[in-house]
Length: 192
Image (cartoon, rainbow, N blue to C red; front, side, top):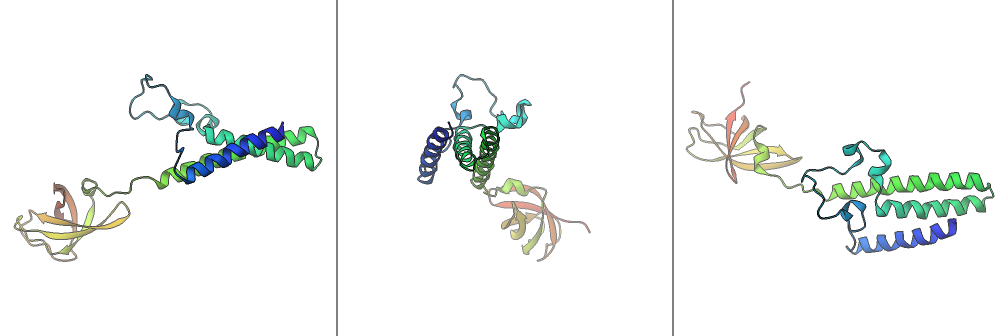
């Protein structure tokens, strides 16, 4: 039994890994992607274990994690039997290693997925944040200057205007009030 699990699980695991390296297979082997098309779920539905109150194990199950569990179940079982620890102990060792492999692959896949998250800064996210004047901004919306700010863990510069009566000089702390267009913000002086 251990040999069959190790050979089949290990072979599929290696094939999956190689296909993923060349960009084939992605999410095609996950159970969540196999849902029927006519299933009515809201667009923001969360299929994780926390969404439906199930056990932690349900949130970890996917084709990749089950394959890893079978492979490491078989390898650990074979190793335990070769060490001569007895059938019951070999089964316990195999189950522990299988579950550990399943959970490890789950967390690695979550980590890899998070690497692909879009880090694009959007000008609308700047509203309400503080910034510093980089290039002086003429008062009464008579012209543009520039501000510099931290947005989504990046230092960015945007053109800025102000409705205040006085010019905002370099280094003045300001708060973004609104987006004027796709590259310009309106700012106001931060009160001390």
